Length: 374
Image (cartoon, rainbow, N blue to C red; front, side):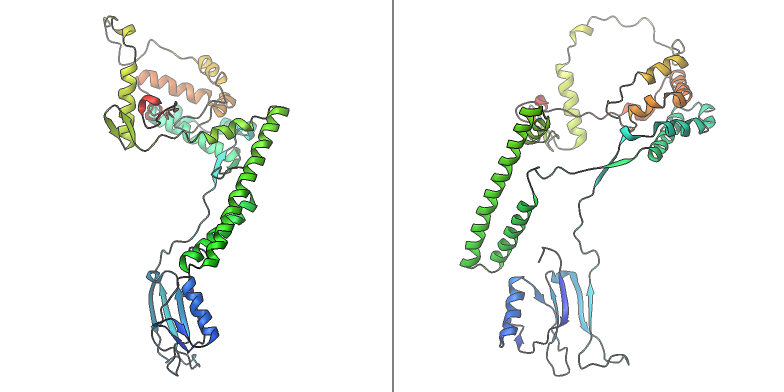
């Protein structure tokens, strides 16, 4: 039985069981008592459920706290024609249930219908954007249009989880389930027989893991030697551990546990190693620039060339817009983006989204919790 909240109800018809001591006088009644004890179940009916005064109808539960009420119902209904007393069982809401891990879905930009994307954007009415002088409105308008177009014309792919090693096959999974079952059984009712069986299964499981891992690593080596298959590099990278930032970071005698404090530690460290010698003797400017950068102009041609020279393999930013979309849709996005750049220069400001960045520190060798080692 899995480690979930289990409730078993029914007419078991064992009047010879003493529920205070969990003992039965007959062989079948004794087997039921052993079953209840081995699975650590609780019998929750404490009142007679038969006209003869016996407890024949049972409510068995692995989690008694989730059974809110077990009570008899009056025999006043004309539809009830039985010598058994009906029972009302009320379960608490919100009982946690097992659910499979969420599947991760991502846009497959390599399969985007760029012809359809261009047609969609060319037919879109950008006049509200072109008549606005608000930087935030212009950027929000463009972003929403691009996101809507991508959602319509870019297929999504499911990314498989790599939480389990590649050599973890169905045979190992089956053996692991058997070990868990025997381990739970031995924990609830320890005997020499279950202990011996548990030891045997665990030894067999370890041997199967060793054989599967050795076979998989051997196949990686052979693939690399014969055809330079790069899969071995991915495997070695997985063995080296995760590159995520630890939950607690240190810098000298300082400690940080929340994201804001950790970011401040990084800022302090980067500032301390920044070479200030090259800018120490720079004279201050004779005048401050105007609030509007009217001396800078961006032409339509400049915007088009910038879009066409984007690297489509670069990672997306905070806005989750792929460079490949901007590059392949340069023609329909040319006028809206040029208008956005123009008002940014005129207002001397940029959208708030452009001020946020995703920075992923890469650990070096040594203590990964030290800011100096990233």
